[in-house]
Image (cartoon, rainbow, N blue to C red; front, side):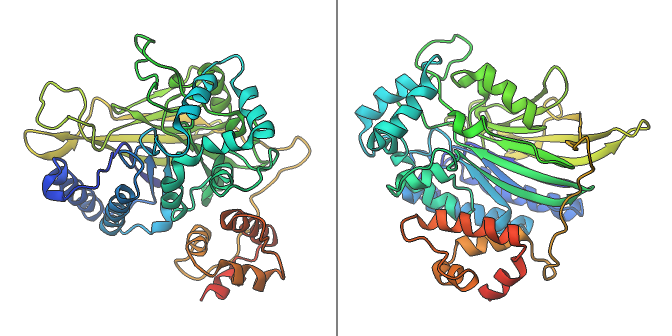
Amino acid sequence: MIRILQISDIHWLAIPDAMDDYNLMRHEFLDDIECFCKNRNGHFDHLLICGDIAFSGEKEQYKKAQSYIEDICDKIKLNKSEVYVVPGNHDKQRNAGKPALRNLIQSGLACESANDKMFYDLMKGDIESFRNLFVPFKEYRDFSAGYDSVEMMMDKCIECKEVDADNDHAYWESIISDDFYGYQVHLYGFNTSLGCDQNDWDDWESKRNGHKMFLPKFAYNNLHKKKGKHIYISMMHHPTKYLANGSKIEGDLDRFFQLQFYGHVHVSDASQNADKSTVRVFSGAMQPPGALGKNDCKYCPVFNIVELSINKKLDGKEFLHIKLRVNRWNDVRNKFEDDNGSSKEFDVEINNNLSRWENTSIPLQPKLPEGITIREIRVKFVSRPDNKRIINSVYHDFFDETQTSHTNNVNFLKKINEDNKWIELWNKMQ
């Protein structure tokens, strides 16, 4: 199986542990997941963090978060390369750049009838205002780069480089398994917090007080399924009901992704859409503000364990089986416990996107050294200070001085994959 640890809404503050009300809970969480691995004779394959990692997007907050993520990985024996992150509305410095101008633009981006046109017009006609939308994510970008979870458009805007509307997508993608029962498993990450400001719409039940969030078409409107056996998973912070044009975006995501991970709502839940083609998993918050010591509070620290496997029916159809185990903090016992009411299981039928003319199999992967994965090579490569030297040693003069380091890394790794040169790259890095 594939076992995923999902957390969200950590809201890290850069304060001493002794001053932090969640200090005990965090230590119990580390002990709990370590005990799970030891006593269940299992392990986690991936850690997904669905936004609001920091409280206000400050550098020191990300340092604290990064240290804690390292503690998590140490407890469950997980390689750093298997950590994936997306930003939330707390992962931005809202006073960075020109906040007054940005707030006006963000109100316009919440207008469902014209927001994508406005976004594109800014990109082509007012690049400085367009880049200003991404400025608050500078510290988040630096933090997420260590986990190879940076979208090209954000990186180019922060580094003041020219944006290519046809190639600089507003998402990142990673292959998290090359052979899962014969399937290749793809994970996509999206930024739903681009339009967040002090007027965020955060009351979906009464539908008032503020404007909705914005996810540009550059994130979801150009996704195409590959031929052959593939499974697609998404992660983002805001559920689609918080987004402008949310119903349309939901339909587009449901057609592409069999499994979707969300944060933001602070309450763990899961549901399946009407035609049973996708499952949505909503993570509770790891550190919901003001939750501890309030027995009547509906929010409490939560983490999810999600196990994926393949079920094959008698008629030959294959289903992605999704088992969600919700773990809820008991504020009286100061322990995590099973939340049986929120834990659920689902089956999603997998339709192979095969050509009507031929069967397409997953390309053969290179034989890597024992214990080394392509994902690990990627993360170790992007974290190195001598990328330019390595790039030009594999492909002469491939490094483009006019582009950001991240753009060069992405283009280089794409060509490495096309040419199947992962072993050569690994050897160059030794």
